[in-house]
Amino acid sequence: GDQVEQSPSALSLHEGTGSALRCNFTTTMRAVQWFQQNSRGSLINLFYLASGTKENGRLKSTFNSKESYSTLHIRDAQLEDSGTYFCAATNTGYQNFYFGKGTSLTVIP
Amino acid sequence: EAGVTQSPRYAVLQEGQAVSFWCDPISGHDTLYWYQQPRDQGPQLLVYFRDEAVIDNSQLPSDRFSAVRPKGTNSTLKIQSAKQGDTATYLCASSSDRGENSGNTLYFGEGSRLIVV
Image 1: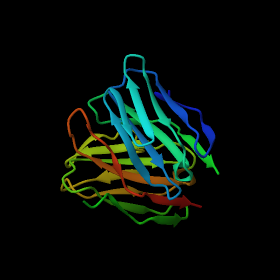
Image 2 (image 1 turned 90 degrees about the horizontal axis):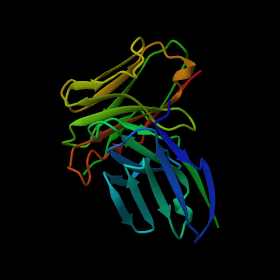
Image 3 (image 1 turned 135 degrees about the vertical axis):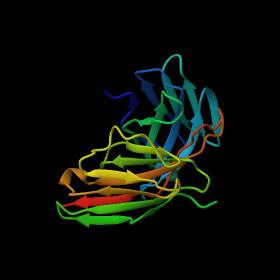
Image 4 (image 1 turned 90 degrees about the vertical axis):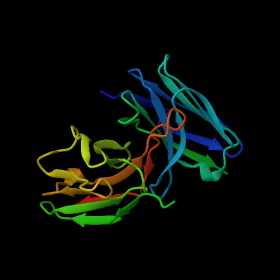
């Protein structure tokens, strides 16, 4: 079964607003990565976390291994934030990453 | 530094034909991954290597798919006798262990999009 469950599957935001994307894990994970997939299909690294919280500009991500979840917060959304966001997590030696099904984000002018 | 390079970007095949995808990872990255991403789904791991050794190919359909990385640098993924269900984007990624803060961050190429008709 799926080890990484992402929600919501789709999200619309008006420019300037914010929201949170979430990944729940069905097993204990050691690390998580978040990616944005743009309209060309390229997967862009956003964060790698083995624990705690990281922030980069308008994005912030948290990974709680004990409670088996990770979140990605987007604030002050811009049009270029549109795309599909994936989390990927590993439960063995930081190598074998399992992807969620993604959250499709549309930022509306 | 140059990113992960993949070719070809696109391939259209009839069922039964074969295709090879090529990947050049980031220089110095010891780990290389091949993922399959069907339309509107997340990437699914097919196989990964550390240097020239296969670490996990349990998700690779072994009867028609094969992957090699003979010198521990470039890699080739080959599909023999393609089926319509193989229609997907094939993504290559590489990584290098950088400790706990960055770990094995995956860096992806732009993918090779395959359509089997």
